[in-house]
Image (cartoon, rainbow, N blue to C red; front, side, top):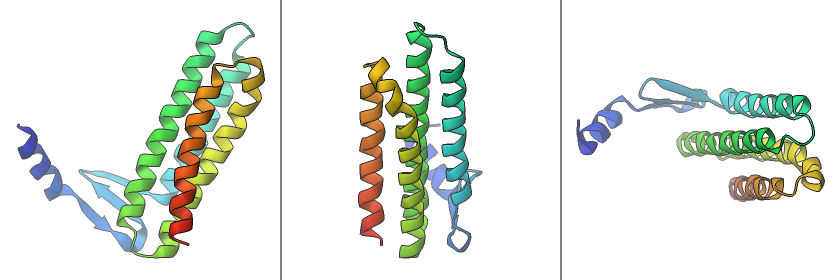
Length: 142
């Protein structure tokens, strides 16, 4: 299947149920609650790795930071898709507010590591970049 054929195929399967704040995309369904669960799971996974990683094992911590950042990026993408499909300003603002909260919680977990491990600063900066972008979108729709 060529790329244009795939895109046409994907468009045919894309539906939106805006009343339920649900996005259907080629058989996948995302709701605001899924965004919340993505954030909680990302934080839980990161916290587990940090608590069980002994000092001096920076490779495991770097991998955990990369995983957390990837999950924040994915959550941001889900938030963008949800916001794109949302009809009301209040609903859109709620989606972006949830993304801001996810970023704030993630940054709060990474911030204490910054003093011990300077390499975590880059991940913290990226999380804060996503937070600021989400906050701008939340304010735009408030």
